[in-house]
Amino acid sequence: MNYKTEYKNLLTVIIDDLRVCISYTPNQDNDLLCFMEQYIKAESHARPSILNEIRNCMDGKDYKNPFIAYQYYDNGEIEALENILKVYICDMHSGENKEKVLANTIVSVNELQEKSYGHLIDNWRNDHLTEFLVLVAKEVSYSSALAVIESKKLW
Image 1 (cartoon, rainbow, N blue to C red):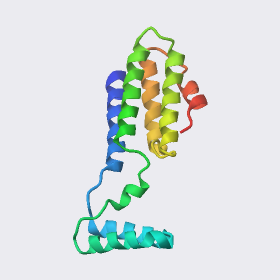
Image 2: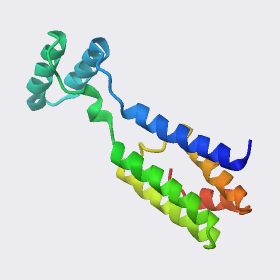
Image 3: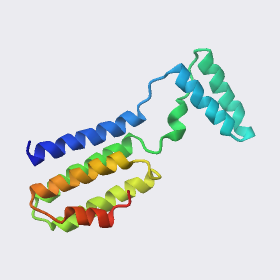
């Protein structure tokens, strides 16, 4: 397998994983558990609305996604990350300074990570994202990528 195939596969895996984590399929049992946890942890003024959602869930009526409270990023951030990484590929293949391209990419990812309160890039995605960035750099014979990544990333 060549670098291009490897890093394109990694990009797909990273983006698909991010999308799966914000996909929601109603499941009454899981949703009730989530609502009950929220109810227990909520301040007294917030409990009536959560109780209403619990009733709706138990009765099979429409209710809001209980996991939305735990989602710190959405499709906008996922698309922004995908765009950053695709631009990185193009820019690394251009005549631009490779270290500057990589550093700017990391700064952009750092900003998304901060915007999502540190939830966009978890440990698993960190490993895959680092591997992706290094593979693209290897393809263009830039050997210092890992050192630059490790010195600049905040994820």
